[in-house]
Image (cartoon, rainbow over all chains, first blue to last red; front, side, top):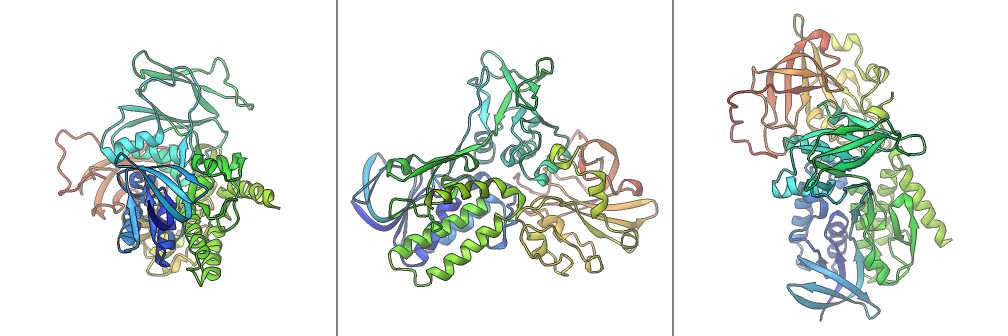
Length: 360
Length: 175
């Protein structure tokens, strides 16, 4: 059994910022991450990020991972367990972890869950054929491992992930036959859409994939137009030659650990699914258990960095280590609120309002 | 069809952000094709001349003081949305200069003739590469192209033509 002040589960943008905020205030911090390096999804993000200067706007995602990891490496009170899996959190404040083939226990005063989100699947015939990928998986293959997922891709979903991965596929020399989007409008940022349109990638709104063709692997896909009630219109089918179909149809928060720890949960579709009920300090209904990043509701990385900072500050405040908590947390909340004021955050704001109403 | 439906700004949107003729007649000037309020402000920090006015709210669209813009293109390389371009109508008789962000390797060579594409990716003419700036790994390269003056407003991307033997980009590693 080891002991530390704060355990952070998940070393993505939220977890890294949570660990930084906590360790800078003198807390002993342990980061548990299942990958072989810190950074979460940042490590494969080759595009420049939006947001504000404080959250490293204009910097490429993988560089943000490097910068945050280097800041952490300078702090002596931080330990990192890589290729480690958090298994459960128990009422005696013990987190069970599998690491290097051993069952380990860490006793902690505060737990910060920043486990991120997972990609959603879409039901259609042959969606289990090799060649049907989550867009994030295709991105991992090419940007982390240097492997082209195929020659020609059909992208399903025109949110930011679908648009960005389409762009990065083209950067890797892969053709993108089209991006289909079931909604009447493009969900991602207009600038991302414009970037792929001017290099000749079509975006078809009110379209979806009807089925994937092939016996052993993907040999093509059939797309069709959707009507106003999102139903496929017979007669509008078109065959798209492709050997890869990428699904970018949304993310769902990864919250198993929070369920298991006994946190009160609420299903908020605007935030991607079930999320824990929290106060503005990101503390769940289980005292000492905090949440940050996409696990608290799916948003952009810059928001994840700020909810991470808030959770980290909240954790050290609970330990009496943060005399300036009021000022620092207020500042982080103000920056977070300003990121969320625009029209692209309408959904997130509506979701957060529903969460607040639970506590009233 | 709107920008939200197609990803292509409408003619009115393009017109609304295009610098007036008297500004364009003075020399190179930046064009901000940024039409959606998103939380983003690196262009403000990128401009050493203060031509991008300070944001009241991080979601504000950039506002440009044309008098202070000399078309240097630093904002072209910094915009995460690759939404800034520089047009120069004074480049040569009949020919304009366009500076555009281009994140595809291999980079074109100076002097190379490339296809000029519009906002929908259609080929509208050809362009001659004049300079390539920002070849350091991680930078957004900015390609300067000379195009027929009538195309300055429409060309927003380039496509390299197939080459039999492709010269290496000076030790450049792939992103």
